[in-house]
Image (tube, rainbow, N blue to C red; front, top):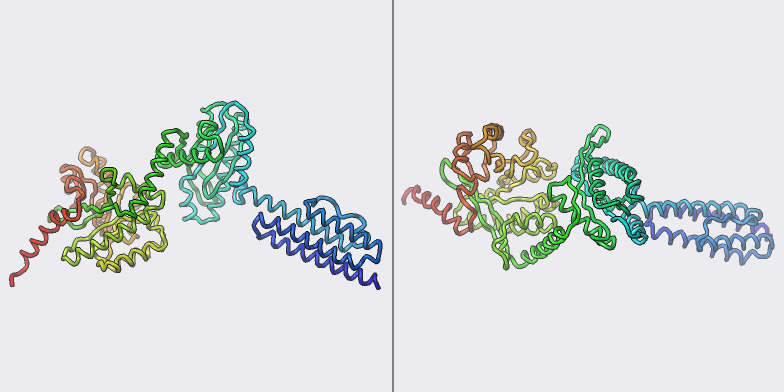
Length: 561
């Protein structure tokens, strides 16, 4: 009777252990690495408790009880971290089903713990060290460093990776990241004889890091940076797609640029951002001047937020003038910062910082509200002039941008036909279907759409005809040399003719001399904007100089009662 009961309980225990193995595999396959270790340990202890309870009822049979004790001891050892020892032979002899289940359980736990360790230490896309693993390895290398040549940390940010993700999809993006990782490994292999062991990691997204613990001199860091640029500058083949990338690289040296990993990462990050601002595809070594520049930028970011709270911004208006009639047709709204401790700050000094920090979204909302409020007042006063406002890439990338714009129009009761949105050429050429649909809807409601700075980026005239656009603003770079260069005149004439051939209006920006304007009139341009004609001015002055005379003429032209 005891034998039958004991055998049935052993079979039930073996089945339960097998079920726990299956559950453990599911949990470990989908859980967080830190939680998985705790789950595995808890399940082992649970088996231990079950075994001990069962043992208390089955000790009448000496050999079986001894086997159960041995199994209990083995589970207890596993609960304390011993996953390598075999299950005792006595268990296999007396309770073979239980022995098989225990071996299966321990094997599954070992496999999954290896998987957890891989998840915890390696980036799954590239196979490189992830942030945690990279930091641990570098901190250990820094602690073990002896006096000698400098150590170097490279902070690498890919140029143009986002467009690959957006156009080819995330699968292609992951494939490209894996190829980048392979080329970085090749750079490290080529430098091993010079720089010793190195660590390569992927911090996040398209950001990679490399650490060389011992370089023969400062020049070696620059040579390695050039090798990285050369490796990543070669074209990548992704099946039928060919991708050209580049990299902006920041370099920090130990110990002069930081004693700790955190200090080195901060210094290399600052140097990388400076390289990116200087035109990308560059490598910069950290310096005190860059540190001061970064501190100034951080202070400027804080001041921008305070300026929004204190309403220190204001708008000025610059007219776009039709030479045929001599009248202003559109007023471009330009933001200025009335800084309490400086002169009036122009947008070139703070808009790039606002773009980087994300403050441009809040600043853009302020401009949007002020423009809509001004347009409503002008419409109520009988002023029919449109007001143009610039829209940045960061703003247009906000999912609710168009909802906020329509809310501002409705809140201030601004007529849509009084508003014109100016979108940069580079942004216009990369707009996705969602944004294009929203712009078409705005145009149907009366809002005008203009492409700004045309000629500074990829001027795709074939793409231009597909866009929901009313006007194109030719950038000053296309007309700067038009008086002295026959080539510049030819290019400008061709561009203007093609744009007008698409049925779009042309406005020429940055006109600074009468000679430029005369030449452009010969080409066929009639609408101009620039300092030669008018500087930006406050609303009151703008109305006095460019609106009031038109209203007087209109009243004179009206038939008398």
